[in-house]
Length: 268
Image (cartoon, rainbow, N blue to C red; front, side, top):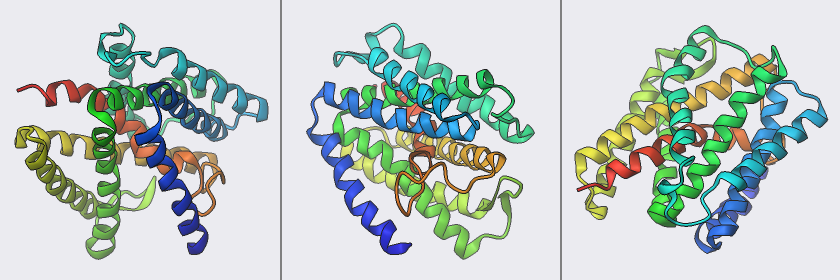
């Protein structure tokens, strides 16, 4: 399992970095659409859709990302970008904590299950395009690293110090100590980034902590959906890693919020 996981990562990481830094704007739009379409196909599995329903959901999300993603670099001038990103951000900040509290399900109806998936995945795809256009490939990578730093720090902090469960009924392995470790690690990371980027340090710190909390919520939401669906991984598309959603659950939550914050972050 470990060898398979490492081999998949050795293929996946260069592929993503090549797409991020080498593809033209239109190619990156198609890449974002492809990733979110695969995520939507897996989302259909969490909703227990049949094969046709999963394919249809993936196609809808992929097409919407292509159609709604800005075709030019002045992304925030497009009238539909703000509402989509704002709706997704409000979901993660307000609705998602309530969803976790009351453990609502995706499986009751096809409509109930598909609508959140379409909104959240399309918003994540648009955010991928918007952030790359506004912040550049390096800026988008720096944003995504927040999720990876938080996840890694939470894991090792939880292993070393974890005693108090964060959400035992949803994800027994996550602890409050792990969450604190994530906040500390991300705080250090964004302060270093502030030094090199010239962005005001306290803005970077607030942004980093905000994105850390949102990423943890995104991680918990996918854990809840998988537990309710009775599955361990969202799919087996990535050998040793599970599915696309297993790898980008935090990013789906983090990216739309980061895209909204970016405009404020770069203001003098």
